[in-house]
Image 1 (cartoon, rainbow, N blue to C red):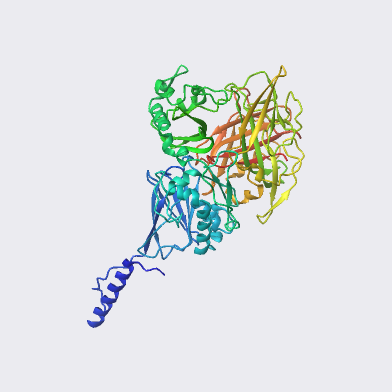
Image 2 (tube, helix red, strand yellow):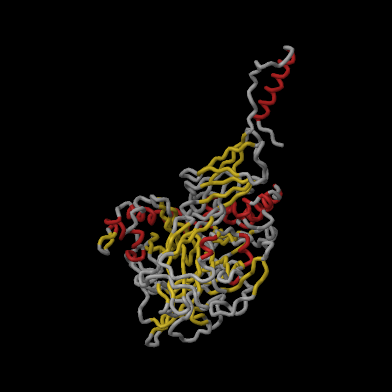
Amino acid sequence: MKVSHMQFGLTLSAIAGAVLLFACGGGGSDSSSPPVSQTATVSGVAAQGAAMANVTVTLTDATGQQTSATTDANGKYSITIDVTKFKAPFGLVAVDPSGASENQESILATGPGAGSSAVVNITPLTSAVAAGSLSSGSPYDVTKPAVLGTVTAADVKAANDAIVALLANLLADAKVALPVDLVGSPFAADHTGLDQVVDEVLAVPVGAGVQLTNKLNYVGSSQVATVSKATVATLGSPFTVDFPSSQIAVGAFNSIKSAWLACFAQPPATRLANGTLSAACQAAASSSPAYKSNGYTFAKDFASWFSDANLVNPTMVGPIVVYATSATRALLQFTLVGSNGDAQTTNVIAQLIGGQWQVTGNQDAYDVSISSYLTSRTAPLRNGAATTSYVSALNPVYRVGANSSNPSNTKYVVVTGPGFPASGIVLAPNPSFAGLTYWPIANQTGAAATRSTTSTNVFKLAQVGVNADGTTSPVANLARVDWLPTAVTDFAQFTGFPEYTFVLVFNDGTTATVKKHLQYNVVPPFNGSLFYWDAMSASTLALLSGNQPAATSVPVSWTHPLSAAGAANVIVTASDGTTGAQNRVSVADDATSATLTPPTDTAQFPAMTTPGAYRWFQLTYRTPVSVGRFSVYDSSN
């Protein structure tokens, strides 16, 4: 056991006192020996591309006891523990109530002794260390005593050393001396040294591990490694530095940050008046070329931000590079945290023009996108025989509605790329369904279509069922238009930001082609059990069972465990078998309830009384820098 100098001094005092009392013939109530401290301190910095300011850090010990603290503006925290009560190993989780940052984890195998302290930083890299140390491979399990309690100092060292070897070139480029302790080394969220390496690696939890992607490669040649206890010995060759790290250094985007903060220092009425941006807000985006993203001008693309009274003098996180496509083009993540504590996050293209980075948007004329999802799906609930499965999926989006930039003469859209049938899937309108802001899937043959009969644009790739004991087993894909006929087994095809092609077919037979990169990889379904999920309440589930009348409002509530991502929005979808309605509402990161009303073009959500009627409720989680996740509760199969 390590004994600190303070402990040693106290021990000598105690011995001296005992000798003196013995010499005096006894020890009465007059003894003034100071008590021995039984407390220790665990402190460090929480950061993810920037300091995680004002977030909650929770320490869990091997017996399940917990204690918490809040970080300061620089991401620093300090927790005092009673060493007679808290038993190592310790797991730590940093949870951002604003939703601006992903939850991050860290681990300490051997706790500090009485009167001493330990440094435990909490970053994407320490989340990877936790994944490489825990038997499950899930960094979220630092809150599970049964998993956390088995971790040894050797486990943590092996994980740390493997990640350091993988990142050796990046660490050398950032002038970090080796060896380095990713958890316990001195750390400041200042984008230098070890924090620079945090900026240069995209770390995404994938359930059984944390996937690390090297941002110092261009898209198309990205190096990727997944860290778990099972893989720490075989992470592969060290990442390479393919272009100067200064190209994507946070400091390179200071002019963008200053311009955005100047714009959002103004009141909403000044920022955007009668469709015209103020001079300060015009300066926040490029003028040559003029900003355009998915067909939207800067004023229209960020209209909801410009009009938000909570976003006056907001806290800005980033810009953070997601990936670089060339020496002069990168995808940046922007986050503004408002006075109400909620975060607004988006990704937008910037280009290096005249030696200065400027926000240009992607310059595309059409509003299409592709993303990946991992879903916790509970169905069918209507007949009371529901089971839960985890489903991996792709989400191709062709946006429609009053605010869409897409043309009215589009007939259908064909989408091809990894995971889709070779001929592509087709998106088309469903005019019988009110409130849809996207075109759902019409077929998976690439054939021309004038309409869809579904209400979903989520294309399912593979699933596993959850058994009674919590384990998972493969389940055949459903025979439906929104499911791939044969489950995907090769998930490596989704790493490294693969490209997808959208072909818009217009009424006159002409076409337009748009290319999009998948920003975050598809996670295999068996990893679903290693994430933490919110759970719908019994009263909400009752609205999905049996026969239900038409509703002018639907109350939805759920429980929210510590390590689960917060909900970003709630969706209610209902169909009587012929017509349907869908609406969604945004919620705060820590919300556990919401009430939804029908979309403006219909008076009520249809009844669920006929055999073909169905409803499904969805919680979409706030995952700003990782694979999208949502929970779906479905009355039908």
